[in-house]
Image 1 (tube, rainbow, N blue to C red):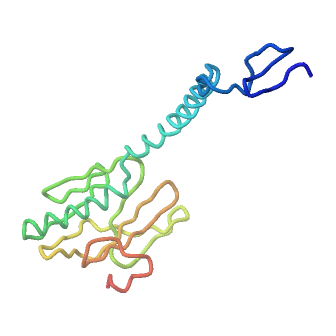
Image 2 (tube, helix red, strand yellow; image 1 turned 120 degrees about the vertical axis):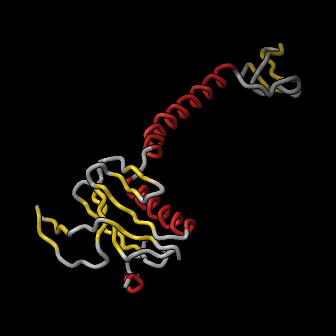
Length: 181
């Protein structure tokens, strides 16, 4: 072989040349190509992350009907305790507004919300779904309690009923219906 490595560097036919195993000097930098490849990869990853996060940010900004309803219930309870008197929470299904006298919450979106009595008394089968008679309003008392009631939230074809605890005015766990009586 005509080229060999020695302690002083690479030698080809007796003359020193620059080679891969350079010793001494400033040999620890990156080439321009390596820097460009890393920047391109960084740009690609950031574009993927920013593109995917747009829909996430839009979903976060959109107010959910269930959250709006539960926040209105909590606000009505808070205002009743603060005022020291009974307040009434009313749901206007036409204007989609929850009103409790000192505040209002507008139900955005296409989901449906209904206030139901604490227990199912009667229902009618309409279009393959049991429809219960809704109640017009719920009272929140100065001691922090409320009338027993349930909230029905319908998203598309799927309906969900939340049982509200009359002592805390919060959603009961699914297996904890004994407290609601």
